[in-house]
Length: 261
Image (cartoon, rainbow, N blue to C red; front, side):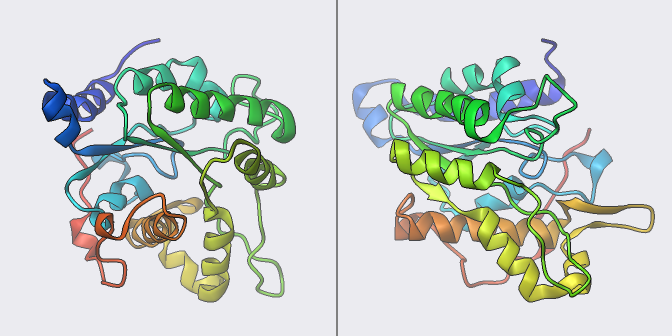
């Protein structure tokens, strides 16, 4: 597997908290890190992709500074390909006791024509998700499953339509079986798109003069989804009240930045 400059930068940023773990006393006091394993809907975007924005880019705005975000989500990955490319192993080499591993996949698991990414909801999808759960637990970290954020799709009557088939249900069932916290972002985002309506949701997705993208977000959309993630993390007690900030405040889209490609 080739490693790009972007991957090296991401790994370097993710490794920063390790500097605080030099001694047992320092390790006890070190800041926690929330790792994200996911696909393009969560991933860090660069200047060549602007205004496309992953919700993981906005999540730090809702968390206190002593809870760092290490966003390992990558465009085009499924629960399977992320593992097969060694990306889960990379996280497990960094994650420490007390950290969190937030896992969101399905968009690319659904691509049945691509054997490098496809998983079947009730078998291989759950099998791969178990690797994330077991891996995090083996390191003393806490795994958290997040159902996939919904695409923008409306029927002729203006109803927001689910697009992920059985994958959300399979993840919900696995979370219950494995006693893992579940953030039901699929249900929450579908309800949000329904409340906004077909036209208003265009201002949350990556609709430009040259592109009509109903999967990826622009800054307002990424901020809205990150707010759902933070709110649901608080509701499910994945995070404590002191971990979460600005839940009811407006976040300026100017806070979103895209590093050079």
